[in-house]
Image (cartoon, rainbow, N blue to C red):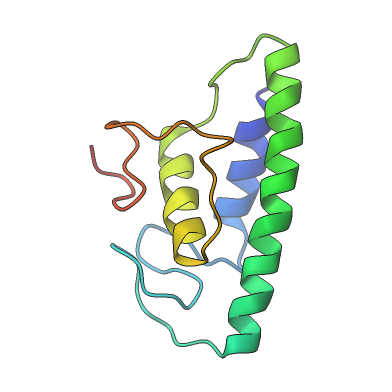
Length: 109
């Protein structure tokens, strides 16, 4: 199975992030609801997103080694990129942004 897909599935379904296409982690972004968080909570979320980024780099390397290139679910990538951008975390070195994957609009083409 695609390692990147497993990681993003877990992330998307994790109660802490509360991502279901409508709610987000207490930050205002495109299609996500705004739930205020403190600066401390924001920094913790950002730290966790940075750790997730490192995990995804390793998962992507594994997928590349096992000839599972670009096997991740597009809807998960869109949601992840959108929230990461709101937390000032860049995923461009993992996922290639294109017209098909617009980080500002999860679930839309």
